[in-house]
Length: 391
Image 1 (tube, rainbow, N blue to C red):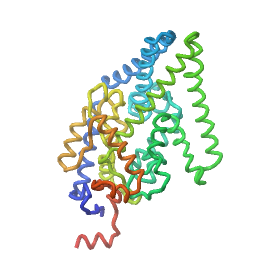
Image 2 (image 1 turned 135 degrees about the vertical axis):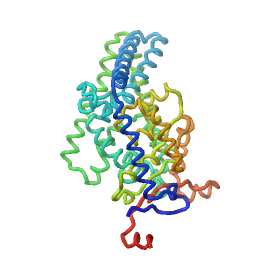
Image 3 (image 1 turned 120 degrees about the vertical axis):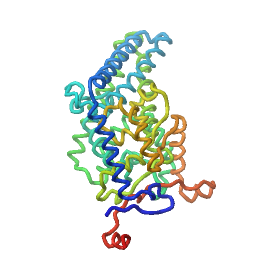
Image 4 (image 1 turned 180 degrees about the vertical axis):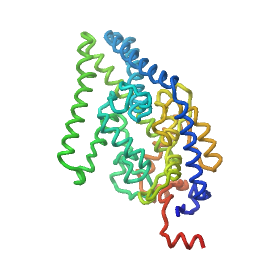
């Protein structure tokens, strides 16, 4: 029988096994509601977004032909930055999740889409769709949690290496697309001898080939096409990529790392039920409050809770179902972690700094109470223990 560890800081101690499974049933109903109502307005939405993005990129690159003039450089760089963000987040990320596969349009399909990013689509889909979304916030299974370079939970053993994690995180933010490509390569797994050499080398060639194509387009072809404005077009492209990387990294951090987002141990998911999987997504994610334009610019990942619950539903539907999901949280007395962009970014960075230090040092330096975590939250007890509990 599935049981939940009871402890003072356990945010689901008040839930019974029946409650957890009922949550799953209710969320399945919300999912089916969206699936049953998908149609032309959703198809028009993604087609219009793709058309907008492509026209904006083309116009921005056209303006950058005259980037020797500062106003043209600024306008072209802003337009290109927005274009790259939209292409990666609202289009690439969501198309490759299979959110639009139901349209049966081969040009907007998870199996055929390749995005403007250093990481090849097939490798990203494996590490993100198959691993991250399956093992959300499970320490040692979900490599998106800290990307293997950061301490993400107080229960992780501290090492001096972690003192520099604020620096690693900042560098990763600036070069985020390359960090993701390296992460998709599973370099750590290879160095530990747990990845075949030929497989690693083949993947490495694929990543380097993608990076070469991306760099040739942004740092050679388009600057050369700008003629006298080659150098300023080069700096515009570099700036746009930096802006895209910083924005994407910030949005991902807000969805996975602020205070209040829970983490889990490997053993906690043994024999996990549908309801328990849903519960892990609910408590292992956080949202960003804001206006429609902000949601659009995040690829609707400002509704990270809804995205983790339903990663293959059309992104334009997350805002519609968010009130239903939040009502479910309230009804079962669960914390729906959400806040403004500034608040969530600040919270995530505060956590990065806090966890870079030993637990004892942090406790001695402040009177702050250690936040609740979900490490070892959902567990399976041996059958004899279940029997004694029932008795």
